[in-house]
Length: 439
Ligand SMILES: [Zn+2]
Image (cartoon, rainbow, N blue to C red; front, side, top):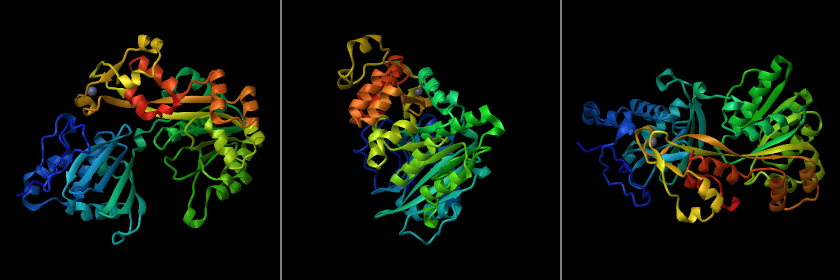
């Protein structure tokens, strides 16, 4: 009986050098990374009769949930069906399966998510409701046709695992105070920036939960999202549906007539949505949204490019919060270390002498990654009279950023460096997450 599975050797750092054997063989997994899936595939019954697809998929999802992964990526590679999980924002291999499992596995996920089983040439998206067999999590399944077959990404939503306590976001005191201050105002537009998975939605939900805790049943909060990631109590949440032409602008215009006090807009990505959000912020609503921009200070240029007049921005935006998540050193295996010389060269003598450079060495508790959990790194730009004047003058982003720094803003890099100095994370992790051009 041929071996069923293969795995990149633990500790193998050189990803590109990995060439799975034509018939992958099982190599020993170690520590906590021993998977239920591997154990199932090695079992005598499976060795005799082959795996049952439903059980195999349950084990794959179970492994991902037990390790605390946010999503599962299943994709046909050249010689294997690669299954990876995203842990603390970074992909990691779970197992490699023979390529001929691909159709059965994608078929199983399609049944679970109520998708069209025979459809293999077009992307499909759906969700599988929480199942006690899968630990009560909801799965958001996305199937994408590639030239080698279907690539499946499953996002894992654990309703019991979500905390929207603003104090638990890990913001430093100054950032938290400034953020609380702008969300406590009755009007204005608050924008969050950062790539996918940088904690923007969690921070916005935490802000909304904070307002509910503060105002109770006297406040009216409505959202337009794509998609609604979590159902919040006492909040009217709507999900855009472009197939039915229920777009951000249409939803927002309609919502404005209902006059909620607080409006959350999932993302500002077009001029029309931007104009409505700015207008709402100017007319007595508190509007919270996200926008794509590398630096917090770049938000203004981005909105001016969407044909929003600088004077409208200057009077409507109360603050921009740049967010990233950096992984924290594993408490069980952290030890002093020397960062890469190239990165060290970017630091001042002052920082180098103050820093307790610490890195996780890799152990069972952290699945050999050296990191456990993540924490927010922030760049809080609060709009005051000086910044307002700079926005009116349409200053380039770099100049605007310098003025904001002069007004006390810490850049993402400066904020994150404080965590490196305290030994909470590594310089390499900061460089990975925060673009080096933001030094
Ligand atoms: Zn560790």
